Image (tube, rainbow, N blue to C red; front, side, top):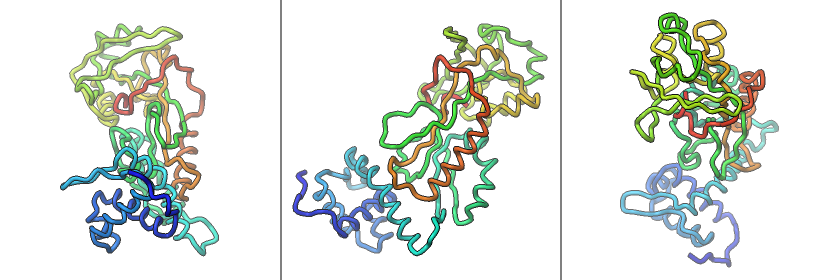
Length: 327
């Protein structure tokens, strides 16, 4: 498609970008038109004009559905934060101070939602009474823009993306069991001993089997062929099973620090716990950041600083899989 160079950016362009945002958020020309008070054909024509203006095809169209093209997704990732900033600036006109308000959608894994955010969100919400927060639990981050998320808090190494990422902390991978289990079955003294124990396993969604275990000390990496009768796919069930004496599990220190400190769980093989797991915050890569996103990121940074009082041992290896790979 050849761009029309004779037309620059004007108020019509802004209207067309607004329609683009409405189509992406609603998932169809019909619903976008209903939200904007326009007909489907009017929205379709506006999108066609925008495609001609920028010189790319924005959507794949079929009789039943539409979807952003790769070029369209990159374009929308670039303009969406600016549209949000324009909308917020319009809403905040005449207000001398920046107000944190509206709905904030946060993409998180189950463990972060259950053990880190929800128990400590109350002061943040009290500080911003005009803000509502939606924590959406996802196995993977997926398409932050297409699914309408403002922020993501995810474990793992960031993949190449137009999103901005910020390292929040690194937490150790540790191995734990309940005192009752260890009293019945004994304390493992070396990684290979785990092959004789009941282990609570984490399901790998890619294979349907469980994720493998390995142990790291100095430069030595020891894989262990663990087994067990119970396999789960979430941090909550995993910790509940370990607390109930079902077996030994690999868990994140971030989730278990208090449980180990008060004796409800016992860390085994502590000298082999040199592996770490990074936690990142993701948001749209732009200097135009809405007040609600900025306020939430400040809150999360302060919160995770509390969760990392000391420097964990430097890892020889860092896990790449997402939170579905570990609790």
